[in-house]
Image (tube, rainbow, N blue to C red; front, side, top):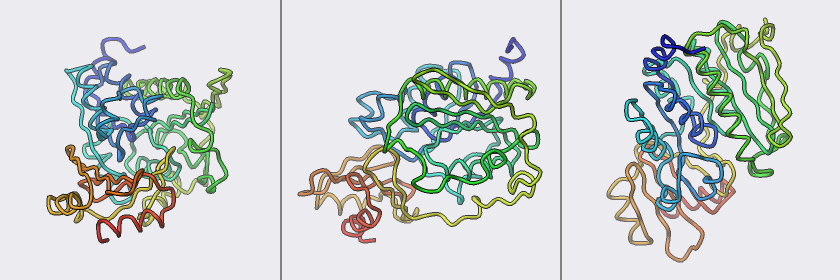
Length: 330
């Protein structure tokens, strides 16, 4: 298994965890406790009370203060293992920045802790382009999936799933929720796959694993012959998701929140904070600020230094844009 030489590889390894939700936090904790020497945690979101059912690095204080997930997770991991380096990044990963955020410096492996198909296919493009292994994971309702992707050796995500599902065709955490024990199980499988990659174990054990977290029935599909000769990504090397234009608005998984991307020139400057205080309550916390407008119960805005705004209390992108225009003038 791991042994002394493997433990040395873990100590010297760099791992990126993309997404600090249920899968990402559980995976990050297992990697930190295993002794992985350098972890970069990337997440765009803040901690909310509904996260605590399954996102194991957070507590009620993080939710009450609206701490950035990446920062809160990093603080907890440093308390768990003070000998490792943890680098939190509060950012929305898009085609514009994924290569800088995930591959500078180049990691040994990337853990998928994302909550949407588009970001996973973007990650697949980027990892294939840079020849970096990554571990796909997903969990919705009681069904979970895990698959290691080793570019140049085995199949990529698009070999197995050539295109992302059409909008509205699959269950989501909005419609069916997610079982907390399932996310822990999938994250444990992802971490085990990542550890095998770090210690350079052969690929003969790689498989697409599906599991029902309630009945505990599982199935493993071997990946030895799954690579497609006509794959648009790892064979033709057309990186369609890396080349896409970034959407300005996006629904956040599992709650009534819409993200609006305005650009780094906006951020959460002192001037903007002063103006917002004249029409509501503002709390600042590190790289972000929380704004609650007077006279609009249930409506909140979270402003990030990278120019993103989370509009809480709405589900429609047009409504969210209207709120941003009303209070930020954009």
